[in-house]
Length: 467
Image 1 (cartoon, helix red, strand yellow):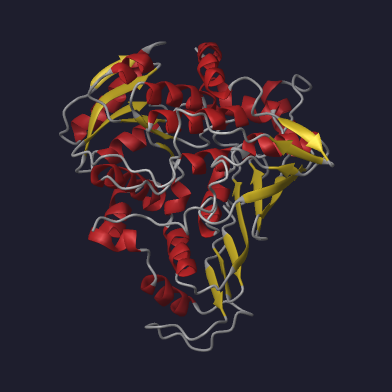
Image 2 (cartoon, rainbow, N blue to C red; image 1 turned 180 degrees about the horizontal axis):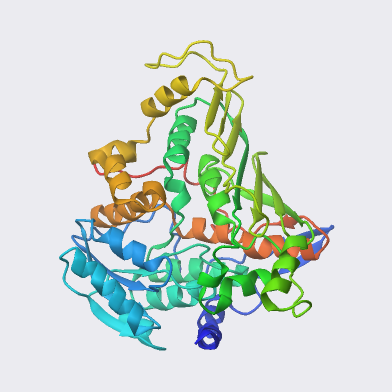
């Protein structure tokens, strides 16, 4: 069955290629830099910046992929008032039945069932689905998302949305041409700490943000066997670079208003040797059976057009505490989430918050930090008791539920989504860009502009709320 998944991916690649036009989205080396092409927008496409579809009274949803992430999403959607689960699809019919039992437990009507090789096509062909929610292996994200948009559906895709620049452009071009939303399900943007810091940044507490850091450092030794057909280990085994960048880069791109006033310009990536990675592969497959490609740690530096810097790291084989390394440094303050949540502010006294002795040379007390976090809770989590509801429903502490809630909220109210197709492309582009940089001796990469020159037409990130 695992072999089938890659046969399916290969067969769907033609869909992606038809959107990307062969090699027109490749790169050349110029002045010791890798320069990616940014071709002009075709005449039949329009920008999706700020795009909002007509309000959808009740968002009808079809789920494709019911292995690791899918069942949790089905569970969470049972709590969303303005959404209805219409269809469920997986390669394996027994997984569909397990998801049906989730609906049963909530007293929700059973959904239409699809399975097997062409199940996703049958689901996408339905006329009574507004949104396709994808939780399949990475290599299938873009092909199925393109197919769904071509069949008139908005799509929400698990991370990363794409694994190559060609796939990133396929998502952008298809979304622009079909006028359908394409959102990547980057849940870490909805973590309570990250959301609150985003609000603080937008309120000016940190001054001008000059540097930000994010990562995905997570020892996957206990989890490798859970990936059907070993697909995730195989991907790491065969590729250099930051193959899973979006948890780290997503929140800090929002902090820096990427393609909403600034853009990521130059990238340089470097990895360590595959010391633990090779040891893991030898233990898993037999010594010397495979050469493990991905470094134990990958570090990527990015400079923006406005002179800000980002550091993104990836490591999934070494024993270490989990970290997304969320950190922001501004001219008036500093925030850090891992290993401990901390704030250090040195600006003017804060309005409506009793915090004394602001000194950015050291963290403020836990009590002062908590008071500040409460005072600057992001507006979207305050609305209608969403924070409390999210903690009750769960999903990585509630951030998964906030993500799903906001997706349906925006579709229901006809508002722009919090994350657009350009976010999906930009954040996912690191999968290829970091590998290419490393393969060329950590050569700088001039990053493609997926907005095609429109990165400064929107002034700052806004999470839309109904009036």
